[in-house]
Image 1 (cartoon, rainbow, N blue to C red):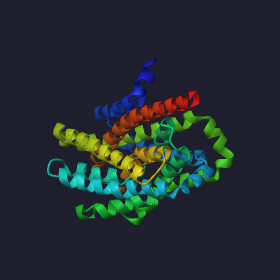
Image 2 (tube, one colour):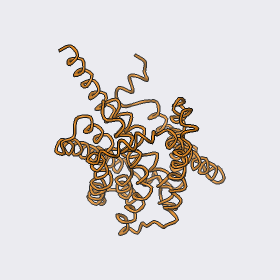
Image 3 (tube, rainbow, N blue to C red):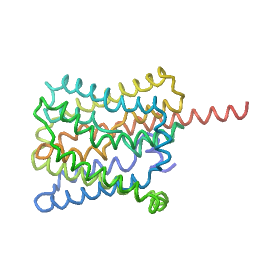
Image 4 (cartoon, one colour):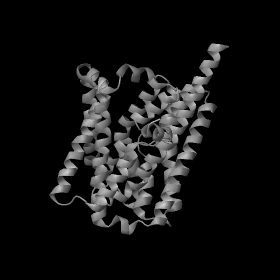
Length: 333
């Protein structure tokens, strides 16, 4: 078995090391001056292009079919934009005496983000869940997130003096929602090409995140982020992220059983209702928290992203293996 396959069995891949390497690069060689401006512009258009690809790739009929599953979609929405923010707010308040203010803001910000798109769908597929419903839940979550995430940031962080403007929402819509809609409109022309060339979406997806991480941490290094965030704070954030993910994942599974969802739908709820999007979160943070210590605010999100990939990969592989065994037993019975 190759090293790449062994890493993926444990929720790891080369991209994790690229993320860590990007942070190290930004620490040693941070972009500044005109270089930082160029990196910011490249990141902006890379994210816009990414969401254009999302729009062009997602099957509109699958989204429409999945959205009719009201119980499942309602539960995904409830966990993403109601329970998660409540947990984030409580967790940030409980930890605020021991961590920096920006990290506490980052925990709240993490909790109000939409679900991931590609990984939620991929893990649902690996686990033999309801893929069309996952496509619907993940894409709808991101579309709603353009409006709900800024609104929740304004509501939950108002007392901390953090606010948003109508211009911020318009900027997010222009960078994320508009390209997504354009991709849906042009899907009949370019959808087939994009579906056949999955590497293109993967490169743009991961590349845009790496550029944003480099940009944010370059600014953070210049501002002295590593002098402000100690090992103690970093450890607290990691433990908090693990506890938050564990609580939400257990809650989604129990809620799915209580609601009478079939096993495939419960898996969809598990993966779509418990994950948070780094691809959406980073560009939104650059707009919503412009002029602030963005690198510190996104740190809880970056750590959560890696933890959720690891945990969900292990669970998805196990669930898929069990589903295959049941099919084989039924076929031989």
